[in-house]
Image 1 (cartoon, one colour):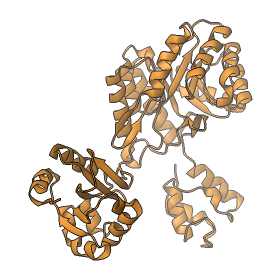
Image 2 (tube, one colour; image 1 turned 90 degrees about the horizontal axis):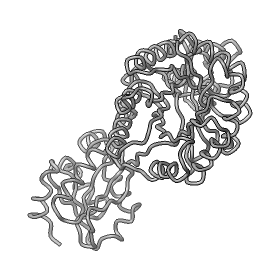
Image 3 (cartoon, rainbow, N blue to C red; image 1 turned 30 degrees about the vertical axis):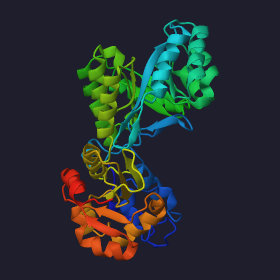
Length: 444
Protein backbone atom coordinates (compact mmCIF):
# COMPACT_ATOMS: atom_id res chain seq x y z
CA UNK A 1 0.00 0.00 0.00
CA UNK A 2 1.12 3.58 -0.65
CA UNK A 3 2.65 5.37 2.31
CA UNK A 4 1.04 8.47 3.78
CA UNK A 5 2.89 11.78 3.91
CA UNK A 6 3.90 11.45 7.57
CA UNK A 7 5.17 7.90 6.99
CA UNK A 8 7.29 9.18 4.12
CA UNK A 9 8.53 12.12 6.21
CA UNK A 10 9.84 9.74 8.87
CA UNK A 11 12.11 8.15 6.26
CA UNK A 12 13.48 11.43 4.92
CA UNK A 13 16.75 12.94 6.27
CA UNK A 14 14.90 16.02 7.65
CA UNK A 15 17.68 18.39 6.60
CA UNK A 16 15.35 20.94 4.99
CA UNK A 17 18.20 21.55 2.55
CA UNK A 18 15.88 22.63 -0.30
CA UNK A 19 18.03 20.74 -2.82
CA UNK A 20 14.94 18.80 -3.93
CA UNK A 21 13.29 22.07 -4.92
CA UNK A 22 10.89 22.13 -1.96
CA UNK A 23 11.17 24.43 1.09
CA UNK A 24 11.02 21.62 3.67
CA UNK A 25 11.22 17.84 3.90
CA UNK A 26 7.59 17.78 5.02
CA UNK A 27 6.50 19.59 1.85
CA UNK A 28 8.54 17.12 -0.19
CA UNK A 29 6.90 14.22 1.66
CA UNK A 30 3.42 15.60 0.93
CA UNK A 31 4.23 15.87 -2.78
CA UNK A 32 5.66 12.37 -2.83
CA UNK A 33 2.49 11.03 -1.24
CA UNK A 34 0.43 12.83 -3.89
CA UNK A 35 2.58 11.46 -6.72
CA UNK A 36 3.80 14.96 -7.65
CA UNK A 37 7.50 14.57 -6.88
CA UNK A 38 10.34 12.17 -7.68
CA UNK A 39 12.12 10.43 -4.81
CA UNK A 40 15.41 10.69 -6.72
CA UNK A 41 15.43 14.47 -6.14
CA UNK A 42 16.51 13.88 -2.53
CA UNK A 43 20.32 13.48 -2.50
CA UNK A 44 20.61 12.36 1.13
CA UNK A 45 18.46 9.22 1.32
CA UNK A 46 20.14 6.08 2.55
CA UNK A 47 19.84 2.87 0.56
CA UNK A 48 17.08 1.32 2.67
CA UNK A 49 14.91 4.45 2.63
CA UNK A 50 15.39 4.74 -1.14
CA UNK A 51 14.24 1.16 -1.58
CA UNK A 52 11.14 1.59 0.58
CA UNK A 53 10.14 4.96 -0.82
CA UNK A 54 10.90 3.97 -4.40
CA UNK A 55 8.55 1.02 -4.13
CA UNK A 56 5.89 3.10 -2.39
CA UNK A 57 5.84 6.22 -4.54
CA UNK A 58 6.29 4.92 -8.08
CA UNK A 59 3.04 4.67 -10.04
CA UNK A 60 1.44 1.23 -9.70
CA UNK A 61 0.66 1.29 -13.44
CA UNK A 62 3.76 1.71 -15.58
CA UNK A 63 4.05 4.69 -17.91
CA UNK A 64 4.49 3.65 -21.54
CA UNK A 65 5.29 5.89 -24.49
CA UNK A 66 4.21 4.81 -27.97
CA UNK A 67 6.04 6.46 -30.85
CA UNK A 68 8.71 9.16 -30.78
CA UNK A 69 8.73 12.95 -30.74
CA UNK A 70 5.62 14.65 -32.03
CA UNK A 71 4.29 11.35 -33.37
CA UNK A 72 3.83 9.82 -29.95
CA UNK A 73 1.53 9.58 -26.94
CA UNK A 74 1.98 8.30 -23.41
CA UNK A 75 -0.31 6.03 -21.41
CA UNK A 76 -0.32 4.55 -17.93
CA UNK A 77 1.36 6.37 -15.04
CA UNK A 78 -1.87 5.98 -13.07
CA UNK A 79 -2.30 5.90 -9.30
CA UNK A 80 -6.01 5.56 -8.54
CA UNK A 81 -9.00 3.33 -9.14
CA UNK A 82 -11.49 6.17 -9.49
CA UNK A 83 -11.09 9.55 -11.18
CA UNK A 84 -12.54 11.53 -8.26
CA UNK A 85 -9.84 10.20 -5.91
CA UNK A 86 -7.22 12.22 -7.75
CA UNK A 87 -7.35 12.27 -11.54
CA UNK A 88 -6.48 10.06 -14.48
CA UNK A 89 -3.18 11.22 -15.94
CA UNK A 90 -2.99 9.95 -19.53
CA UNK A 91 -5.97 9.66 -21.82
CA UNK A 92 -6.20 6.49 -23.93
CA UNK A 93 -4.82 6.47 -27.44
CA UNK A 94 -7.42 5.63 -30.09
CA UNK A 95 -6.08 4.03 -33.25
CA UNK A 96 -8.00 3.10 -36.40
CA UNK A 97 -7.22 -0.28 -37.95
CA UNK A 98 -6.30 -1.02 -41.56
CA UNK A 99 -5.60 -4.39 -43.15
CA UNK A 100 -2.65 -5.55 -45.21
CA UNK A 101 -5.22 -7.15 -47.53
CA UNK A 102 -6.29 -3.67 -48.63
CA UNK A 103 -4.77 -1.78 -51.56
CA UNK A 104 -2.62 1.24 -50.79
CA UNK A 105 -5.26 3.81 -51.77
CA UNK A 106 -7.83 2.38 -49.36
CA UNK A 107 -5.29 2.30 -46.54
CA UNK A 108 -4.28 5.87 -47.25
CA UNK A 109 -7.87 7.10 -47.27
CA UNK A 110 -8.15 5.97 -43.64
CA UNK A 111 -4.77 7.48 -42.80
CA UNK A 112 -5.86 10.86 -44.19
CA UNK A 113 -9.08 10.75 -42.15
CA UNK A 114 -7.12 10.13 -38.95
CA UNK A 115 -4.45 12.68 -39.81
CA UNK A 116 -6.81 15.50 -40.83
CA UNK A 117 -9.89 14.87 -38.69
CA UNK A 118 -10.17 17.37 -35.84
CA UNK A 119 -12.89 18.41 -33.40
CA UNK A 120 -12.38 21.80 -31.73
CA UNK A 121 -14.01 21.78 -28.30
CA UNK A 122 -13.47 24.14 -25.37
CA UNK A 123 -10.56 25.70 -27.21
CA UNK A 124 -8.79 22.35 -27.69
CA UNK A 125 -8.10 20.39 -30.88
CA UNK A 126 -9.28 16.81 -30.35
CA UNK A 127 -7.97 14.09 -32.66
CA UNK A 128 -7.64 10.34 -33.00
CA UNK A 129 -4.14 9.15 -32.25
CA UNK A 130 -2.85 6.80 -34.91
CA UNK A 131 -3.12 3.74 -37.12
CA UNK A 132 -3.13 0.02 -36.32
CA UNK A 133 -1.92 -2.21 -39.16
CA UNK A 134 -3.30 -5.75 -39.07
CA UNK A 135 -1.54 -8.66 -40.73
CA UNK A 136 -4.45 -10.63 -42.22
CA UNK A 137 -2.52 -11.94 -45.22
CA UNK A 138 0.08 -13.92 -43.29
CA UNK A 139 2.68 -12.49 -45.68
CA UNK A 140 5.72 -10.53 -44.48
CA UNK A 141 5.87 -8.80 -47.87
CA UNK A 142 2.24 -7.66 -47.77
CA UNK A 143 2.53 -6.54 -44.18
CA UNK A 144 5.60 -4.40 -44.85
CA UNK A 145 3.84 -2.93 -47.91
CA UNK A 146 0.85 -1.90 -45.79
CA UNK A 147 3.12 -0.32 -43.17
CA UNK A 148 4.95 1.57 -45.92
CA UNK A 149 1.61 2.83 -47.29
CA UNK A 150 0.79 4.27 -43.87
CA UNK A 151 4.24 5.81 -43.54
CA UNK A 152 3.94 7.46 -46.96
CA UNK A 153 0.94 9.57 -45.92
CA UNK A 154 1.36 10.61 -42.30
CA UNK A 155 3.61 10.75 -39.27
CA UNK A 156 1.34 8.97 -36.82
CA UNK A 157 1.89 6.56 -33.92
CA UNK A 158 1.31 2.97 -35.01
CA UNK A 159 0.39 -0.42 -33.66
CA UNK A 160 1.73 -3.37 -35.64
CA UNK A 161 -0.57 -6.38 -35.23
CA UNK A 162 0.92 -9.73 -36.30
CA UNK A 163 1.24 -13.11 -34.59
CA UNK A 164 4.38 -14.28 -36.40
CA UNK A 165 7.65 -12.70 -35.19
CA UNK A 166 9.07 -13.02 -38.71
CA UNK A 167 6.18 -11.02 -40.17
CA UNK A 168 6.44 -8.52 -37.32
CA UNK A 169 10.12 -7.98 -38.06
CA UNK A 170 9.27 -7.18 -41.68
CA UNK A 171 6.91 -4.44 -40.49
CA UNK A 172 9.43 -3.14 -37.99
CA UNK A 173 12.04 -2.91 -40.72
CA UNK A 174 9.87 -0.15 -42.22
CA UNK A 175 8.91 1.84 -39.10
CA UNK A 176 10.81 0.37 -36.16
CA UNK A 177 12.82 3.56 -35.68
CA UNK A 178 9.56 5.28 -34.67
CA UNK A 179 8.89 2.75 -31.88
CA UNK A 180 5.43 1.46 -32.73
CA UNK A 181 3.54 -0.73 -30.29
CA UNK A 182 4.10 -4.42 -31.03
CA UNK A 183 0.99 -6.60 -30.75
CA UNK A 184 1.05 -9.25 -29.39
CA UNK A 185 3.16 -11.66 -27.37
CA UNK A 186 1.53 -14.88 -26.20
CA UNK A 187 2.71 -18.03 -24.44
CA UNK A 188 3.66 -19.45 -27.85
CA UNK A 189 5.67 -16.57 -29.33
CA UNK A 190 6.73 -14.32 -26.44
CA UNK A 191 10.46 -15.01 -26.75
CA UNK A 192 10.55 -13.93 -30.40
CA UNK A 193 8.36 -10.88 -29.76
CA UNK A 194 10.39 -9.83 -26.71
CA UNK A 195 13.57 -10.11 -28.76
CA UNK A 196 12.08 -7.74 -31.36
CA UNK A 197 10.88 -5.34 -28.66
CA UNK A 198 14.38 -5.24 -27.22
CA UNK A 199 16.06 -4.90 -30.62
CA UNK A 200 13.91 -1.96 -31.76
CA UNK A 201 13.22 -0.43 -28.34
CA UNK A 202 9.46 -0.79 -28.86
CA UNK A 203 6.69 -1.28 -26.29
CA UNK A 204 5.08 -4.71 -26.40
CA UNK A 205 1.56 -5.94 -25.71
CA UNK A 206 1.14 -9.33 -24.09
CA UNK A 207 -2.10 -11.27 -24.47
CA UNK A 208 -3.65 -14.00 -22.35
CA UNK A 209 -7.17 -15.01 -21.32
CA UNK A 210 -6.84 -15.11 -17.53
CA UNK A 211 -5.37 -12.65 -15.07
CA UNK A 212 -3.09 -15.35 -13.70
CA UNK A 213 -1.72 -16.04 -17.18
CA UNK A 214 -1.24 -12.32 -17.85
CA UNK A 215 0.73 -11.88 -14.63
CA UNK A 216 2.91 -14.89 -15.41
CA UNK A 217 3.51 -13.75 -18.99
CA UNK A 218 4.35 -10.17 -17.97
CA UNK A 219 6.98 -11.47 -15.57
CA UNK A 220 8.47 -13.65 -18.32
CA UNK A 221 8.46 -10.76 -20.80
CA UNK A 222 10.20 -8.48 -18.31
CA UNK A 223 12.89 -11.12 -17.78
CA UNK A 224 13.32 -11.40 -21.55
CA UNK A 225 14.15 -7.69 -21.64
CA UNK A 226 10.98 -6.17 -23.12
CA UNK A 227 11.45 -2.43 -22.39
CA UNK A 228 7.78 -1.57 -21.77
CA UNK A 229 4.58 -3.60 -21.62
CA UNK A 230 0.83 -3.34 -22.15
CA UNK A 231 -1.59 -6.15 -21.34
CA UNK A 232 -4.55 -7.43 -23.34
CA UNK A 233 -7.01 -9.49 -21.28
CA UNK A 234 -8.52 -11.02 -24.48
CA UNK A 235 -12.03 -9.77 -23.74
CA UNK A 236 -14.56 -10.57 -26.46
CA UNK A 237 -17.71 -9.19 -24.80
CA UNK A 238 -18.45 -5.99 -22.94
CA UNK A 239 -19.18 -7.79 -19.68
CA UNK A 240 -15.98 -9.81 -19.99
CA UNK A 241 -13.96 -6.64 -20.57
CA UNK A 242 -15.36 -4.71 -17.64
CA UNK A 243 -14.87 -7.66 -15.30
CA UNK A 244 -11.26 -8.22 -16.32
CA UNK A 245 -10.26 -4.55 -16.66
CA UNK A 246 -11.68 -3.70 -13.23
CA UNK A 247 -9.87 -6.63 -11.63
CA UNK A 248 -6.60 -5.66 -13.33
CA UNK A 249 -6.91 -2.07 -12.13
CA UNK A 250 -7.78 -3.13 -8.57
CA UNK A 251 -4.85 -5.52 -8.35
CA UNK A 252 -2.46 -2.97 -9.85
CA UNK A 253 -3.50 0.04 -7.73
CA UNK A 254 -3.48 -1.97 -4.51
CA UNK A 255 -0.17 -3.55 -5.59
CA UNK A 256 -1.66 -6.93 -4.75
CA UNK A 257 -0.38 -8.28 -8.08
CA UNK A 258 2.41 -5.94 -9.27
CA UNK A 259 2.83 -8.00 -12.45
CA UNK A 260 -0.53 -6.60 -13.60
CA UNK A 261 0.65 -3.01 -13.21
CA UNK A 262 0.63 -2.16 -16.90
CA UNK A 263 -1.69 -0.19 -19.22
CA UNK A 264 -4.55 -2.13 -20.82
CA UNK A 265 -4.93 -2.78 -24.54
CA UNK A 266 -8.47 -3.28 -25.90
CA UNK A 267 -9.27 -4.31 -29.47
CA UNK A 268 -12.89 -3.13 -29.63
CA UNK A 269 -13.56 -4.72 -33.02
CA UNK A 270 -13.79 -8.22 -31.55
CA UNK A 271 -16.86 -7.40 -29.45
CA UNK A 272 -19.29 -6.83 -32.32
CA UNK A 273 -20.43 -3.64 -30.53
CA UNK A 274 -17.64 -1.23 -31.40
CA UNK A 275 -19.16 2.10 -30.34
CA UNK A 276 -20.27 0.73 -26.99
CA UNK A 277 -16.91 -0.97 -26.49
CA UNK A 278 -15.05 2.26 -27.24
CA UNK A 279 -17.13 4.20 -24.72
CA UNK A 280 -16.65 1.46 -22.12
CA UNK A 281 -12.91 1.37 -22.74
CA UNK A 282 -12.58 5.13 -22.27
CA UNK A 283 -14.65 4.97 -19.09
CA UNK A 284 -12.99 1.89 -17.67
CA UNK A 285 -9.23 1.83 -17.80
CA UNK A 286 -8.29 1.09 -21.43
CA UNK A 287 -5.06 2.84 -22.42
CA UNK A 288 -4.90 1.83 -26.08
CA UNK A 289 -8.10 1.28 -28.07
CA UNK A 290 -8.14 -0.17 -31.57
CA UNK A 291 -11.23 0.29 -33.72
CA UNK A 292 -12.43 0.13 -37.31
CA UNK A 293 -13.13 3.27 -39.34
CA UNK A 294 -15.46 5.66 -37.49
CA UNK A 295 -18.21 7.90 -38.79
CA UNK A 296 -17.75 11.58 -37.99
CA UNK A 297 -20.60 11.62 -35.41
CA UNK A 298 -19.17 8.53 -33.67
CA UNK A 299 -15.66 10.01 -33.71
CA UNK A 300 -16.81 13.33 -32.27
CA UNK A 301 -18.87 11.68 -29.54
CA UNK A 302 -15.91 9.49 -28.58
CA UNK A 303 -13.46 12.40 -28.50
CA UNK A 304 -15.88 14.42 -26.39
CA UNK A 305 -16.31 11.57 -23.92
CA UNK A 306 -12.56 11.09 -23.65
CA UNK A 307 -11.99 14.79 -23.02
CA UNK A 308 -14.62 14.79 -20.28
CA UNK A 309 -13.25 11.73 -18.49
CA UNK A 310 -9.61 12.77 -18.74
CA UNK A 311 -10.02 16.39 -17.66
CA UNK A 312 -8.70 16.85 -14.13
CA UNK A 313 -11.79 17.47 -11.96
CA UNK A 314 -9.64 19.47 -9.54
CA UNK A 315 -8.46 21.96 -12.18
CA UNK A 316 -10.70 24.32 -14.17
CA UNK A 317 -10.41 24.17 -17.94
CA UNK A 318 -8.59 27.28 -19.09
CA UNK A 319 -8.31 29.41 -22.21
CA UNK A 320 -5.04 30.94 -23.29
CA UNK A 321 -4.91 34.62 -22.31
CA UNK A 322 -4.96 37.08 -25.19
CA UNK A 323 -7.19 38.95 -27.61
CA UNK A 324 -10.04 37.03 -29.22
CA UNK A 325 -12.27 38.29 -32.01
CA UNK A 326 -16.00 37.75 -32.31
CA UNK A 327 -17.12 38.33 -35.87
CA UNK A 328 -14.96 40.80 -37.76
CA UNK A 329 -14.33 43.68 -35.35
CA UNK A 330 -12.84 46.97 -36.56
CA UNK A 331 -11.00 49.79 -34.82
CA UNK A 332 -14.10 51.23 -33.16
CA UNK A 333 -15.58 47.90 -32.04
CA UNK A 334 -16.28 47.33 -28.32
CA UNK A 335 -13.80 45.50 -26.10
CA UNK A 336 -15.07 43.11 -23.40
CA UNK A 337 -12.90 41.96 -20.51
CA UNK A 338 -13.18 38.25 -19.71
CA UNK A 339 -11.37 35.70 -17.55
CA UNK A 340 -9.72 32.53 -18.83
CA UNK A 341 -12.20 30.12 -17.20
CA UNK A 342 -13.40 28.33 -20.32
CA UNK A 343 -17.09 28.22 -19.36
CA UNK A 344 -17.11 31.99 -18.80
CA UNK A 345 -15.33 32.57 -22.08
CA UNK A 346 -17.61 30.41 -24.22
CA UNK A 347 -20.77 31.70 -22.53
CA UNK A 348 -19.81 35.30 -23.23
CA UNK A 349 -18.64 34.47 -26.73
CA UNK A 350 -21.97 32.82 -27.54
CA UNK A 351 -24.03 35.81 -26.42
CA UNK A 352 -21.74 38.24 -28.23
CA UNK A 353 -22.16 36.25 -31.44
CA UNK A 354 -25.93 36.28 -30.94
CA UNK A 355 -25.88 40.08 -30.53
CA UNK A 356 -24.58 40.52 -34.06
CA UNK A 357 -22.09 43.18 -32.94
CA UNK A 358 -18.45 42.46 -33.85
CA UNK A 359 -16.36 42.67 -30.68
CA UNK A 360 -12.97 42.07 -29.13
CA UNK A 361 -12.55 39.93 -26.02
CA UNK A 362 -9.56 40.63 -23.78
CA UNK A 363 -9.03 37.37 -21.88
CA UNK A 364 -6.83 37.73 -18.80
CA UNK A 365 -5.16 34.99 -16.79
CA UNK A 366 -7.09 34.36 -13.56
CA UNK A 367 -5.71 30.80 -13.27
CA UNK A 368 -8.99 29.42 -14.59
CA UNK A 369 -11.25 31.01 -11.98
CA UNK A 370 -14.63 32.54 -12.81
CA UNK A 371 -15.15 36.30 -12.52
CA UNK A 372 -16.77 36.26 -9.08
CA UNK A 373 -14.24 33.83 -7.63
CA UNK A 374 -11.31 35.66 -9.23
CA UNK A 375 -12.43 39.02 -7.82
CA UNK A 376 -12.98 37.56 -4.34
CA UNK A 377 -9.63 35.75 -4.38
CA UNK A 378 -7.61 38.65 -5.78
CA UNK A 379 -6.86 36.81 -9.03
CA UNK A 380 -8.57 39.56 -11.03
CA UNK A 381 -7.22 43.01 -10.20
CA UNK A 382 -6.37 46.33 -11.79
CA UNK A 383 -2.68 45.53 -12.21
CA UNK A 384 -3.43 42.33 -14.11
CA UNK A 385 -5.84 44.13 -16.44
CA UNK A 386 -3.45 47.03 -17.12
CA UNK A 387 -0.55 44.66 -17.80
CA UNK A 388 -2.72 42.51 -20.08
CA UNK A 389 -3.76 45.54 -22.14
CA UNK A 390 -0.13 46.40 -22.78
CA UNK A 391 1.15 42.84 -23.21
CA UNK A 392 -1.49 41.91 -25.81
CA UNK A 393 -1.06 45.13 -27.78
CA UNK A 394 -4.75 45.94 -27.42
CA UNK A 395 -4.02 49.67 -27.70
CA UNK A 396 -2.87 49.17 -31.28
CA UNK A 397 -6.04 47.24 -32.21
CA UNK A 398 -8.62 49.94 -31.40
CA UNK A 399 -8.80 53.74 -31.61
CA UNK A 400 -10.92 54.18 -28.49
CA UNK A 401 -9.88 53.56 -24.88
CA UNK A 402 -13.05 52.04 -23.43
CA UNK A 403 -13.16 48.66 -21.70
CA UNK A 404 -16.38 46.83 -20.80
CA UNK A 405 -15.90 44.75 -17.65
CA UNK A 406 -18.20 42.03 -16.22
CA UNK A 407 -20.83 43.19 -13.75
CA UNK A 408 -19.32 41.09 -10.98
CA UNK A 409 -16.06 43.04 -11.39
CA UNK A 410 -17.77 46.39 -10.76
CA UNK A 411 -15.83 47.03 -7.51
CA UNK A 412 -12.64 47.19 -9.60
CA UNK A 413 -13.88 49.74 -12.13
CA UNK A 414 -12.29 52.84 -10.61
CA UNK A 415 -9.00 51.06 -9.87
CA UNK A 416 -8.80 49.73 -13.43
CA UNK A 417 -9.36 53.21 -14.83
CA UNK A 418 -6.61 54.66 -12.61
CA UNK A 419 -4.12 51.89 -13.37
CA UNK A 420 -4.74 51.52 -17.11
CA UNK A 421 -5.88 54.95 -18.21
CA UNK A 422 -8.86 53.39 -19.98
CA UNK A 423 -12.48 54.37 -19.42
CA UNK A 424 -14.41 51.50 -17.86
CA UNK A 425 -18.03 50.58 -18.56
CA UNK A 426 -19.59 48.07 -16.17
CA UNK A 427 -21.46 45.47 -18.17
CA UNK A 428 -24.27 43.15 -17.05
CA UNK A 429 -23.69 40.44 -14.48
CA UNK A 430 -25.42 37.91 -16.72
CA UNK A 431 -23.89 37.49 -20.19
CA UNK A 432 -27.42 37.06 -21.54
CA UNK A 433 -27.80 40.83 -21.17
CA UNK A 434 -24.90 41.89 -23.40
CA UNK A 435 -27.03 42.49 -26.50
CA UNK A 436 -29.33 44.89 -24.66
CA UNK A 437 -26.32 46.50 -22.98
CA UNK A 438 -24.60 47.16 -26.31
CA UNK A 439 -27.76 48.60 -27.81
CA UNK A 440 -28.24 51.05 -24.92
CA UNK A 441 -24.73 51.81 -23.68
CA UNK A 442 -22.17 51.40 -26.43
CA UNK A 443 -21.38 54.59 -28.28
CA UNK A 444 -18.94 54.56 -31.16
